[in-house]
Amino acid sequence: MINEKKRQELEKQGYRIVGNHSAVKSCLWQKHDLLDRGECYKARFYGVDSWGCVQMTPSLPFCNLRCIWCWRDTKFTLPEWQGPVDEPIFIIENSIKELNKYLVGFKGNKDVNMEKFEKSQNPTNFAISLAGEPTFYPKLPEMVAELRKRKISSFLVTNGTNPKMLERLKQDPPTQLYITLSAPDKETFTECCNPLVGDAWEKLMQSLKILSSFNSRTTVRLTLTKDHNMIRPEKYAGLIRIAQPKFVEVKAYMHVGFSRERLDEKNMPSSQEILDFAEKIAEHLDDYKIVDQKLDSRVALIAKNSDTKIKKI
Ligand code: SF4
Ligand code: SF4
Image 1 (cartoon, rainbow, N blue to C red):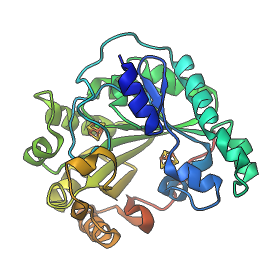
Image 2: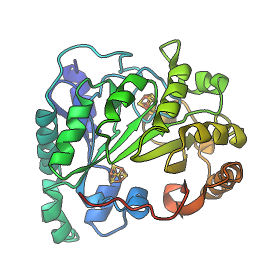
Image 3: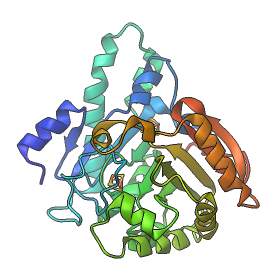
């Protein structure tokens, strides 16, 4: 599924391949946190441990969109699942093992916070969002359940084009479920996300509706790119009303990875522009307001109330 040349290329970028279709990568914020140089916005907003986070994907080679802001090599992904399906326990255990192997180098760094380093060997969170579309992995509900059994929280991000999997996740949802709302309307979605399937927008709309029926922590995330999808805040607000999420993250596109081949640095909104846009969205949502922001991550959090922290499992 992932040939040797691609594997080597990905490993050079810091990815570690797990089994047939999964990958793990230490996130920049995890490294910062191990050196006591700051935590990610999910640590600030929700109480996730950046030092204890496993950034991973169970479906590295599969995605049915080609978003212009994607930091991954979108030429490499296939629009639908094919090949063998690895077991959730194998993926979880080997993701942790590969991440620990990668982080072992920190042990020799005199600036590392050793207490955090020791604790990081037993991760507390899985960020299931590294690359590809995770809801294509057929055993995703079993994986989420297995993480809960191991007292590991799960933050899962989907592009919303697989409503059938959302229905399956409803019984035993991840700690926090995200849908990325990439555009305020179909035309902008098609232009920005270059879907490889004809009904991707319609499926995203179905997923927003399904999200409203979850009793768990749900989030609609906007990745805003100037001159592309950073338009029509009132339309975004209308779609957010359908999904009724607990949280809305209004976040800037970051000019990193492969997106630099498609976009310019000036497409990246400033933190002030993000705040202004979040204000405009919140104006159209009666019971929501901006409850927090993290300027260095260019992200604002909109919610119904400021009690946003996860309960540690
Ligand atoms: S939650 Fe996301 S940003 Fe924070 S440490 Fe994990 S992967 Fe990195
Ligand atoms: S849905 Fe996610 S993984 Fe797929 S192309 Fe868009 S940003 Fe990349």
